[in-house]
Image (cartoon, rainbow, N blue to C red):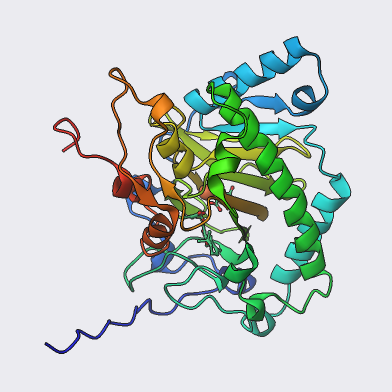
Length: 365
Ligand SMILES: COC(=O)C(/C=C/C1=C(C)CCCC1(C)C)=C/O[C@H]1C=C(C)C(=O)O1
Ligand SMILES: O=C(O)CCC(=O)C(=O)O
Ligand SMILES: [Fe+2]
């Protein structure tokens, strides 16, 4: 039998939201208008400090006495179990470096469209400038411009997509990524300890860990009530580190008890979240939590998001220490390469991507 030709992905015309915004429209194209149930105005919890995601003081994990260290470790455990998210203050990364990364990313987004389009994200791929996770002409679009690059190991890089302008971009990204990588490694150590595992468990297992960056730019939107900045999803990584642009308005929201909780930006803090990989390895004790981004009528927003994950050949399954009679194994064995492929070939839709790894039980089917 002749091989069936693979049908090319037809995504139709994707408007660049910064260009749309320049035209100062009063209405927005239908492709951005969400169905009622998805619109951001519904079921958002009222602002109150009890609804804020936990804050971890990193300096207490590196420099403090044993009691302070243990308090912070137990805060990590509670954050990962109850929220899947926390913010880190005193993380040790130079604030100048965070600012420089923000500046080069913003300078990139502010280039003329023709310049940015020299680094296109081809349909069905995830690196370059454009909108990822769009697979059909009738799929709703996010009010976001995205620029994503693979960083480590080097073989995942596509050097043609690393921009020549701004000239400082590549060097800044290299230095930034090295610092963020160290933070990921330290955090994974503390996360392992917080669940009673040896501190080296994840790093020993991950091999030459994969690291990628996604820069999301959300211009102001004339109808923030109708659109989403970024569709609801959980991250496919082990850990995600998110830096919000200085002076950013709240935009990130996480789903907790069926309501969307806004994450209040803390100046100079980094937002950390558990990805699907840690959910699987901990047999669901630490959950990857669904999140999304919303837009603002007058203010723009930038987020710089680093994904840190095991090397592609690494086989993943719940750690035997976390599986027992009371906590039967919930996820099957697969390689991170298989999961990455599955993740990047499906649209973002809440936690649906993780179904790939779930063992179907009578209750879940
Ligand atoms: C737009 O990209 C993403 O949202 C994304 C992709 C990351 C990647 C690259 C930009 C280059 C190649 C590697 C990789 C797939 C990690 C999200 O990353 C999540 C999804 C998975 C899976 C993961 O490990 O991180
Ligand atoms: O911009 C944000 O706050 C959310 C970004 C995000 O969730 C992502 O890039 O995976
Ligand atoms: Fe995310």
